[in-house]
Amino acid sequence: MNVILVDFRAFDTFGEVVVVVIAGLSAASLVNTSVHKKNKINSLIFATTAHIVAALMLVFSLYLLLRGHNAPGGGFIGALIAVIGLSLLMFAESPSYVRERLYYSPFGIAMVGLAVSALSGVMSLLVGLPYLTGLWWKEVVPLGTPLLFDVGIYLSIIGGVMGMLLKVNEELD
Image (cartoon, rainbow, N blue to C red; front, side, top):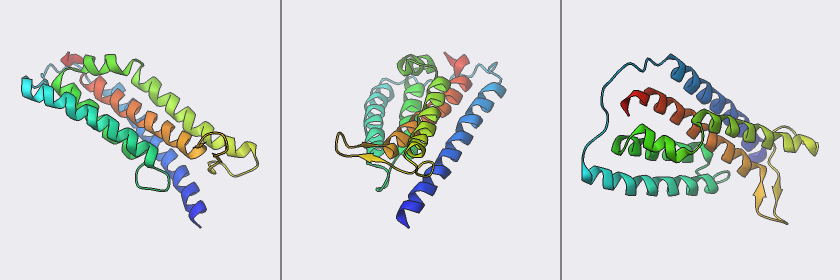
């Protein structure tokens, strides 16, 4: 019964992430960036604290990502924590500061994440199991399709949400 629930949860989560990425793309395309309101908080204490807290949040988000599957955590909640940390840096520094540290286009990151999640499900089809059934390779390394799925979800949420937030704040630089 647990295996059925875990497999169904993965399919449900994949659908939710597709909706989040589509919503982020849609919102970014509809946003009018002619607003010139300044969001940066000019405080040395806030900027210093934001860097420390954001770094801790990013590390904690990776912990949640790696802890997921059969324990509370996973790619979805880990990515939400990471997005909050990156948003904190946007307020402390600027949207361009965060954009430079992402290295790649946020929506490109989201598309790679969707592809990784979808391909992790295809691997089980190749061995004759239903789509998104978890496979583990403990003999070589403790790696499996549930971890790949969560990494894809993690990238999709970060890319989709950060793409929308950076688009909304692009005139604030």
